[in-house]
Length: 309
Image 1 (cartoon, rainbow, N blue to C red):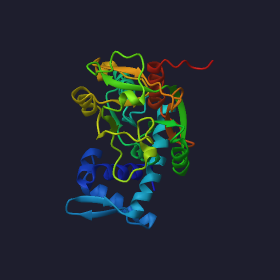
Image 2 (cartoon, rainbow, N blue to C red):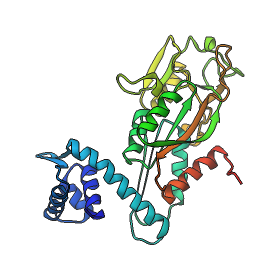
Image 3 (tube, rainbow, N blue to C red):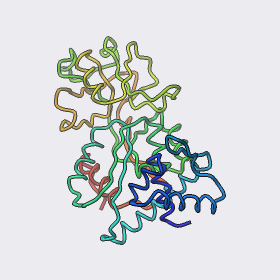
C-alpha cells in the first residue's frame, strides 16, 4: 500500500466517482481502477460498491477511509512542516458550530495566503457533525463550546472519538436581538423579559440530544421556539419576529451586520458568568499543519487572546 494509493482512495470517496476522481488526479480511468483493485487485493477487502451512478463506500471501506485520511493527513502535515516548497496542493478544512468569528478568522487566513493552488473548506454545521468531521479527518479542526450542562456528555463523545478540546475563551451569557426589538434599549434582560418572544435555536437533527444544542440553557422550557439551520435565516427572523437567541456575546459585525445588539442576561435562576467555554478540537496525537496553526492564531487575534510568555 502506497501513499499515492491512499490519496487515490480518498479522492474517489470525496468525488463519489472513479471517472471524476481520475480527472481530478490527472489520471486515466483504467489506471485509477487498476490501482484501486491492487489496493483492495492487498487489503483483502472491497472498499467501494460500483454502480451505474458512481461508487459508494462499503462498511469495510468506511472504516478503512478513516485510517487512510489519518495516515495521509499526517503525511501532508509533515511535508508542510518541513518542506516549504514541496509543490503539494495546500489543504485546510474547519468545521464549526454557527460562530461568525470562525468565518471571519477564515477570511483573514485566506487573505494572507499567497499560494498558486489551495483547497480550503469551512463548514458551519451541527454539533455532532463537527465532532464526526474531525474524527474522520474530513476537517483538521472543529470549533464548539462546553458548558456546565453539556460538558460531561460532549467530553465523553470526544474521548470515544480520540479527540481533545483546547479552550480559547470563556464567555458570559447574552441575549442577541435586533435593534428594533422592544427590549433593545435595556441594560440587561431576564428570562421573564424574554418569555413573550420566540427563542431561536439552530436545528441539530431528528432525535438529537439537548447536549448538542448550540444555545445556552438548552435544558430550560421556552414557551416559543423556532428552529433554523443557518445564521442568515436566524438574523432575518430576529428582525421580523422580534426573536432572540442566547449566545456568547462574540458577534462579528463585518459579517452579521450592525442591525442587532447584545444584552447581558441577568436572572436569579442562573449564574451566567463564565458559563460558556469556546474552544477547538483535534485528533489526539496529530501534528497540526501550519495552516491550521495560523488559523488558530487568527481566531485568537480576533478574540483578543494574548499568547502566554
